[in-house]
Image (cartoon, rainbow, N blue to C red; front, side):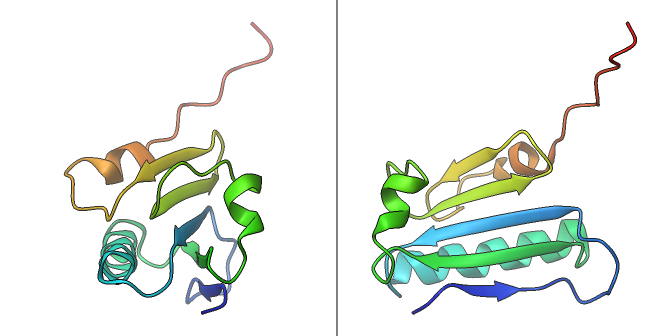
Length: 108
């Protein structure tokens, strides 16, 4: 499997970008892909881009992305980068990935 994308269905600017690192098409990988897409569709209503990246096809990603376990879902933007490790079955992962701290004022 190569990296695949689920683009946002509208033509506007995508505010959220995610990359889901998986190891092949194992049941755990498939579960993580299914759960990520369902949750992101539910909370972001298509205002996101999800790339599924198979480290079996591109092993250099393990080191480049500093991965310690798979699957790992990474929110690339908005910053700061956030990670959730596992098949996304634990409650609360969406809050961690979707919460974005308020912008700090540089005028203070």
